[in-house]
Length: 252
Image (cartoon, rainbow, N blue to C red):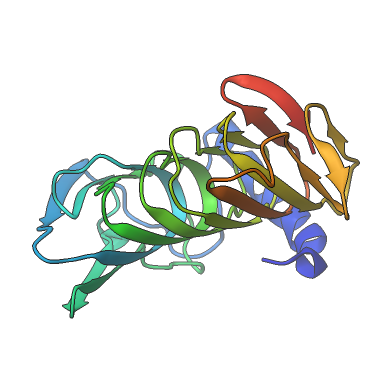
């Protein structure tokens, strides 16, 4: 969702979300049936895998991603709409693996406020990681500091996002964030060089603890030996707060 469409479509979607606060359904089509909560787990063995690309697509719900898995990936799904059962596709060849998980799309169906969907995903910290995250409506919490993440691409959609990159980094990391509509908090490590390029669209930039350099913001460690984190943010509509460790230092 790019900024050219975000203002027009965002206000329409936000208006559609208002019934959630009053206990009504959203949408005008045939309602999705809410049943008992289902919990499903799945694991993928590490084996000889050296690199993993992960594509996650959540239309409505919450997502939590962490490192630290003993396996290549450990997954837990919890949902109470049978038609939201995630589609999982895994392939592996020559030490390279790809994991794709998608929540089925039912845009023409109405959704009760009782509908629930949450994903918990743990990834192996020692395998080279590429993560592509596409959120529709909901909350995401991604904490992958100290992993071997190389590339992170996030479409925030509509809702709140927390991205925690604090921890030790031995290799460079490239992050692209399409901010969508809502609030986002990004935590970066204190001793790692960080460069943030922000296209805010609506709102201004105030960056305490960072200095402006060629249209971007950099911290004191940027340009020093060691790993570098490059973050490219399209903020869209809403606020993005940058924190060093647990201390808020920049609001975009």
